Length: 164
Image 1: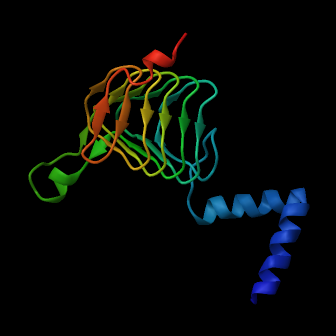
Image 2: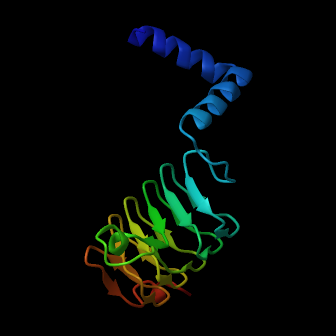
């Protein structure tokens, strides 16, 4: 197929609802994507608790397989974010027989920037901002904090003064 043919096909898919639905179903089947209430291109494993009015961007992952993951109300999680309760590196190098799994809590009104990783054991307080590209280790972060970098740096209370 030539580029022109592909563009014509994509245009037909966008304008015809039934064809668009068939294409989406085929894409989900071919890529072995799991059905979830967010979007077919958000990868969800296990059964995380996801609050009301939560946005999770495309190509993000929420892995709650065999552990608890809680995402509070009114959170905005950008594209390409990994929220992953599992750590298998000890298993891979032969130092453990099991995958280490720890719960994750993201409280209400949290923003997580693109290309960030939230590791098992993390507890992110309400009204926090996780900057793009941040690796959040498994620890408790106070509400209203700004978290950035790898290794992560926490500015506790950074946003608290903005509240009236």
